[in-house]
Structures are given as C-alpha cells and as structure tokens.
Length: 183
Image (cartoon, rainbow, N blue to C red; front, side, top):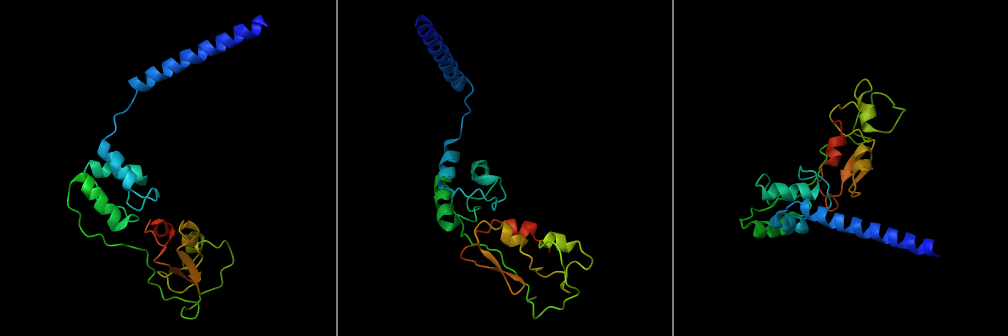
C-alpha cells in the first residue's frame, strides 16, 4: 500500500512541476498580437478560401492591419464585412462590387464541332494535354469534364450540356475553379 501512495505522490509532484514550468514558458514565450488584427479576424467569415489572395482569414487580417490589403478585399464577406473592418481601422470604405466566376463559353454539345471522341480520365487538365487540346474544336472554350465542379466547395458549378454553369448566388469567388481550369 505504501508503494501506491509513494507513486501517487511522485506522479502528482511531477505533474505540478511540469504545470509550473509550462505556465512560466507560456508567459516568457508569448507573442504579442495586435488588438485590431483580432477584431478584424472576428469580422471575417472564416471560410479560409484564399479568394482574397492571402492564406486564409488570419493572413488577410494581418495584411489589413499592416496596410498591405484593402478593407474590402474579402470577396466572401461583401459590403457588410468591409464596412465593419473599415470602422475598426478608422478609415472610409469604398463601395464593394461582388465578383463571381462566369463562363463565357457557348460550346454546348450541339454548338461545338467535335474533333474526336475522348475516352479517358474525366478531368480537364488530362484532356488538355491530348493532341488538339481536347475533343472540342474550340481550344479556348469549356472542356466540360468538371475539374472546376470537383474543386468548388460551395456546389456553385454544374456541367450542363458540356459547359460549366455557375450559380452566382452560391459562388463565393474563391478563385479555386479558375486555378484548375486549363483554359
């Protein structure tokens, strides 16, 4: 029985010592954070989509505080978030224009001339390296294999009749679909 009590006391003492050391380390190694950066981060939507051009909402908040980014740079937050951030920063906000992805292609299955029939992995980037740049005769149009659909986190893109169609109400303008599209 004495061994159990001694072991309990030793484990408790070690836990107490480690707790004290961690408390001291957290005070000595703490990093000062700008209060405005925290306030701005709380206003941002938290999607961490990268649509603003920064690595997540924390990166954008830091850039705004350092005057490297505009207060209305978050495409997801829109005018309401931009106004709140402008108030925190003590600056005037300019009008925010909501941007969404848009496909200009009219190369539907009945409008396009087919060069050949492709049998392979249904991915636009794979099709683009095939001779001729894809089965559609138009080398700049939508390939219709859905790489953008798989990349969109908001289910804003659907392939209809061989062309990507974007639901502008769902689109958050994160730009991921543009990055995966070879055209």
